[in-house]
Image (tube, rainbow, N blue to C red; front, side, top):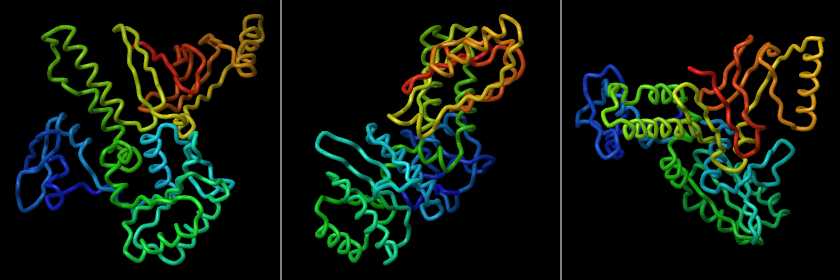
Amino acid sequence: MGILPFTGANMGLRRVGRNTSECHRVRKGWVQAHPGPRARACKVPHAAVAVYARSVARIEWATISTGLYEDMVAVLLSHLHPESVRIDGSGGDGGRDVQIETPEGLLAFELKSFSGRLTAGRRRQVERSLTRAARLDPLLWTLLVPIDFTDGEIKWFTRLQARTAFPIDRKGLTWLDARFAQRWFIARYFLDHLSDEIVRLATVLDQERAVLARGAPDAIQRAELLVQQLNEIDPYYRFEITTDGARSSVKIMPQYRGAERDRPISVQAQFLFPDDEEGRAAAEAFRRSIDFGTPVTVPAQYLQEITLDMPAGLGGTFRGRPEPARPTRPPSPTSRRWLQRPG
């Protein structure tokens, strides 16, 4: 499962479920259960379910693989420090998985997914990482591991600092739990697979108020709520929506520097250019775009199939002549805008 909801024993919070005989009430932004000997599920309004999506959850670190742990914590650090950069460790990470370059020097972060205790073997792994990081002469080296140290482990880390020429620090279980509780959407994205559910909630939010009683102010408020919902489903990108009622556009922007590298947006397309004057001209324009990055618009009749891998359900595969999603300008590292078909 990956995530353990808080229960009455830890802050009185309970998970909102479905098909229940015991209802829950929403108070001050939390989903709180009525007192009772057991937790049972219950049907609740969409708004309450949306509130649950923001509720505090506890991560079961022992069930998480090393790769998933590194992905999650690297994204967390990118939200805490947008200037941070993740290091590709395929050729060796040099004793750090994430780094921040500052005018004063390098801040290095080593991510270890250990749970339980720091055994002798695990301590040697940390020491080897620290030895490799020493070649970079960092301003500070920080170990992030989901363990709250015992007295013996604290003494070992203190001895490690004594024989290291630069400062070292550690962030443990309590620190990680607190930071992920503040940014619940990161863990939800990786562990609970709630993206589809939150997209569905966004489409039905306040659906019962179909009439815009106050006109434009109600429409603006509803649009803002929907965009807020959309911006909570992806830790890599945020979104802006514009529409004139007939045609809509979604602007996709990285949440932090390097997000487009951590979660690339990719396009795969198949074109068929006829061997005539127009077809050859279109093919040449397309080749120049690939070779030199010049803007190009390919007529829809030449498109056989296009597959977009995009966040928040914006991607998909489009076939045939209907107008596909297309960029309104050449993609840049910091901003992408995609047009969707009307309707």
